[in-house]
Length: 256
Image 1 (tube, rainbow, N blue to C red):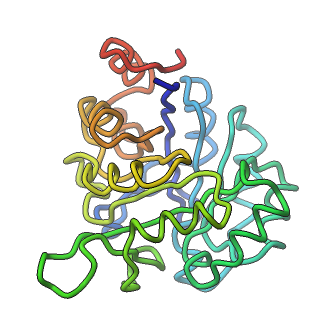
Image 2: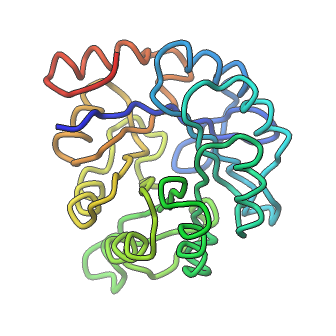
Image 3: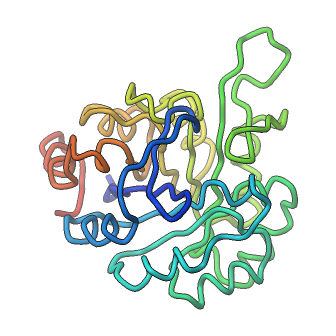
């Protein structure tokens, strides 16, 4: 088994790390610079920074927030939210960001994936996919892509979209279940596994981590290459070292 990554996620609003449930009811968690410094020290493999209201507010990522984190981060650092053009990506990469993540913009203009992969290399391009489940018989895809911080349904079948973004040049997929987000009831294993088995690029599971067993399930049952974690790290319920030691004891390859 390849080495599994543990990745804290900084959802940022108004310059603060926040966390909600199903993308709503956000509560303050901590300062992003303080969080980034701590997670680097504690052994995180990578860090993801999402300016979660940039697209909804029709603006670009707030560079001043990103720059403060760039100045302290010592591990690979991905930024997403409000990135809609090659110019936006270049500006972030010039700032010191390792990878850029696009979501709504990729759905609106899939050619952007191909252009970005050619311009910067697929290793620096993450396509984030937010999804929700629909009831059988609803006439909608069982797994459907949602955009604009989960506020807008697209009618796009999620697994098919995942295959397409790989074909277009995405280096990895960040997959978040809106239904599971912030619930701490576990990742959406059906969604994660469906995508992971459909593509050959790494898939990071996101949304729903509440206990150590959930991380293990995402890797073993969901076939994820990495797990994104927010609530339980932000509020000190579980440490990164605890997570890695647990997975290692279960036979999962992690870097400690």
